[in-house]
Length: 351
Ligand SMILES: Cc1cc2nc3c(=O)[nH]c(=O)nc-3n(C[C@H](O)[C@H](O)[C@H](O)COP(=O)(O)OP(=O)(O)OC[C@H]3O[C@@H](n4cnc5c(N)ncnc54)[C@H](O)[C@@H]3O)c2cc1C
Image (tube, rainbow, N blue to C red; front, side):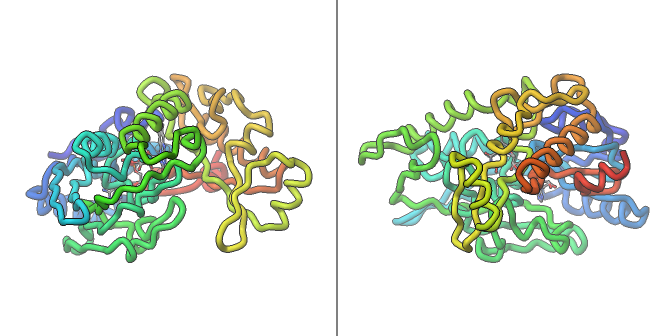
């Protein structure tokens, strides 16, 4: 079933009003032939195509002039060997529900990634990460359907080329790869990952359980991050910038307390939220959009923000940080224009 001229407000966690010409709900694999017919028509009519999960990492900058496929494929299959569990999960399953169900069934390893919004099929796209772990740590393989050919393919974790908030699925060659399911491998010899950030306060003795980490992560995140169901947002708006050592040294001489994380390649990762906070931008507002008072890295919709309000605010934050620290912030949130993916600089050119 395809809907036309449909509001996208319920389908993006920023709760920005925008419309799409067509919306297709992909609920099961028997719909593949029907979907491919709609794809063919869209291509013939020169219409853009967008794959959508839970809409929690997206900013609709304007109405979408094409076909959106909302991925709602369900199903979780668990098999086990002596040493590990293998979970094959439909791309439309809710990520946090999967983490919770695993913890309840004694399948450990995903607890650090609790409460990340969105669906399973989007997790490989930016290699979701939190509290010292990333999706790639549990990934065995990812299955996708090539929307051009209709063929199903499977990539091993290595072939997915996972990086910091990055994977092969963000490259132009994989623009039409719709992830259908992922397979996770979770070792039965579970090791806690609790040395990162706020989890440091947990006891690191042998007694610590995955459930305790899960509960701590849920508690910290609920206290720290605004709930998109109450206050529209897309989580961290910008990525943590990675700069060269010289710039990091210059900034550290001026700001000795600046958080900095040396990387294996000699570069240094900085905390985007700290830079925005130091630039006194917490609470800064443009129209109905503002920088969150407690979390400088999160831009929020105060209720009536337009996409343009968010875009202007993001531009102001990026430019202010650039002027004060000579650090260029890149947005983590995917910007979607009328004919497909765009970016902050492009959108600002037309304002
Ligand atoms: C409050 C909050 C906290 C957050 N915290 C974190 C965090 O700690 N760590 C983190 O990494 N992220 C975080 N995020 C960002 C977001 O939750 C993740 O990026 C999540 O994986 C997005 O899932 P989604 O289903 O909403 O994807 P969407 O926003 O719908 O899509 C994101 C991208 O993935 C593509 N995509 C979606 N599904 C598929 C598919 N089946 N096949 C191919 N491409 C697809 C889309 O085209 C789009 O480019 C947070 C967001 C919010 C709102």
